Length: 328
Image (cartoon, rainbow, N blue to C red):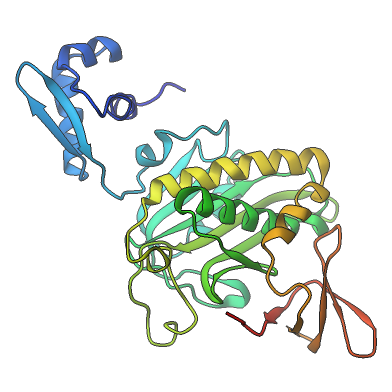
C-alpha cells in the first residue's frame, strides 16, 4: 500500500531537520503539485507541528507535537507488520472493545487500536484503568498466533518484556516486571497489561494484547497517588515523546514475537526473568481459591509462577494478584 502523502512529506522534513527543503524539491520528490505540498504543510501545522517557511529557502521542521495520530506513529516505524495498520480515535470507552470487534470482523494480524483517552479503560479482573487525555499510551494489538490456547498467557509476559525494553531504549529508565501483568518503577505501577483470548478448544482465533502506559501524567487521583507513577515523574518531570516510545515498543515486540513463534517461550523466559521483581522473595499470591504465601522460586517454561510454602510444597500459580514487600 502506497504511503500517504502527509507521511511522505513528514518523513522528508524529519530526514532534513538541519536544512530547508524547497517546495519545488518536495513536490518533485513526492510527485505532486506545490499547492498540494502547501496544503499538507498547513495540515501539519494544525496538528501542532512547527514548520518554518521562508521565501527562496523552503520549509524546515522546527518542533514536533506529542501526538499519536497514525502518521506520527508510522513515520520512523520499522516493523514489517506490527503497528503498520493503525486505528486511531481521539476518545474511546476502551481500546480492547474496539480491537475485539475488529478481530471478530476478521482483521489481519498486527493492527493496533490507539486513542488519546479512554473513558472506561479496563484492567485485569474487571478493574478500571485511569486513562487521561494526552498523557499516556492506551493501546490494543491484534494477534493471531498459531499456538494452543493454554499458551496465550505467555504473550502477557512477552508484552511486558517488549514494553520494559522499549521504555529503557527511549528514556534510559529501568523498570521491573511483577508477574503476571504489571510494570513497576520503585514499587509503583507505571504500566498495566491486559491479554484477552478468543479461541476454540484446540486453536487460538485471536489474542488482544492491550497495555496502558502512564507516560506524561503529573498528578493522579488520591486513591492512586501512593501506588502509581509515570515515566515523566521518574524522568525529573521531563515529558517523553509518546510516538517515539511507542515505535520502540512495537519494534521490540515484533522481534520478540517472531522469536517466540519460532522457538517458543524458552526464548522469552530469561529476558522476562532479567526484569522480574519478587523472585527469590517471600510473596503472597491472592487467588480465587485463597491466599498462598511463600518463596517465589521462578516461572516454568510455560510462564506459570512457582511458590514454595513453609512446608516445602510447590504451588503452581496460573492467575493471581501478587503482593511483594517493597524494599528501596
